[in-house]
Amino acid sequence: MSESTNKGGWRANKWVRAAIPALLLHCSIGTVYCWSIFSQEIADYIGFSKGATEWAFSFAIFFLGMSAAFLGNVVEKDIHKSSLIAAICFAAGMAGTGYFIYYGGSHKGSAIALIGIYICYGFIMGVGLGTGYLSPVKTLMLWFADRKGLATGLAVAGFGAAKAIASPIMQSMLDNLGEGGIYKMFWILAVVYFVMMFVGHLLLKKPDSWHEPQTKEKGQSMMAVIKSKPITNYVGIWLMFYLNITCGLALISQEKMIVKCLGLASVVGIISTVSAIFNAGGRLGFSAWADTMKDRNTIYKLIFILSIIFTGIVIVTGGIKNGEGNMMLTILVLALIFVVNAGYGGGFSNVPTLLSDHYGMGNISAIHGLTLSAWGIAGLTGNQMAAWIVKTFGTAVEIPHALADGTVEMITVNPTGYQYVLYATIVLYIVSLLLCVLLVRPSGKAAEK
Image (cartoon, rainbow, N blue to C red; front, side, top):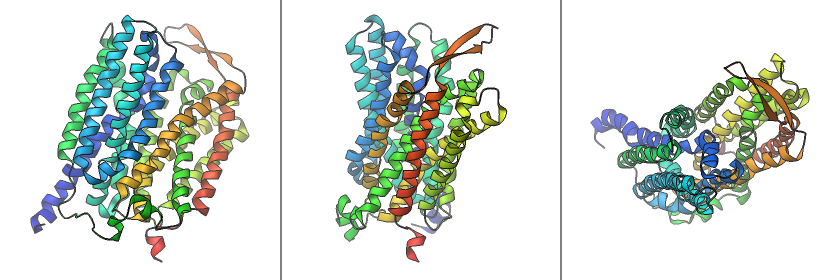
């Protein structure tokens, strides 16, 4: 590189060639988490129960993880091919979902409509999610070599913040597009997100100074690189990543109902937005903080310890069951929701940099992709575990909720069931902490000592 490129152009390029395209990609695919905004409307429009349509979201997260695991080598070899695959699959999945919603509207209860949504939103979009999530990560770490955590945190924060940004826009579209607004919204957004992701695809570029290593590290297969350290090291990273996502999804999936138990139904939307901000903030804050630490694994220890403490406090005080009308318990439960959201986000942003500290940059996209399989499996287990616990334990009760027009509606909740979810998550958080301490060896600066 020329001196001018190093001083001026280089500084511009790392934003234009890495940060901006990463945000364009992640802010698009991150809208998968807006599912709760329109899931009930889809169910009503095509004539199925909400439970039946919910599987589309679970499949999307599952295929995100699986496509990342199986296509990690494609990302490793050619980020332009993988980012183009992401743009095409994500947009095509959204457009196809819109079509099958449209079809289901005129063929109520049609299995073809439901299966079509599973395929388009679950499988096709899922492939776009996995490749789109992975594509900019290594490039970011190469451009921001001294602040890898900050760079990956910025992009992954875009994934987390996408829900907070897109949710009000989607709600406005649903309110103003008239009859069939639900499928029209998907068609419009398919075009918008394809343009955003295609621009990101065109801009994304590794630094000119980077040459893929031809060393022993690069010559080895991904599994050979992983086995260069005790296999328990990688198993520990995979399991603690999986358990953190499972616990996060278990609580986040019940978040709205827990908030209603506290008597805060009128502000559940505001609290959901705040928790999304904590989710995004945890992705950026924890990963940037890890850049200053000798061992990035310390961040995971902090995440698990904080989660254990706040979960334990709410269990001991019975905060969810007893929180309505009690300001202190309400604050504790909300604090738990915000801490878990921040730790859930922080777990995502720190895993690629932790892996790079352990296994180097040569095969990082492939190894990161394999690790994201934990996300795919957690997408099937986290929500379903919480739903089973709530259905099995406790008793559903009705509580009054005052509407804006002065009328009162009754809301069905299960405070005891939500409290039991915490018993499961605190055990898993403790297991995660033990794995973090006992299996994952020091890395980075700590390993050099």
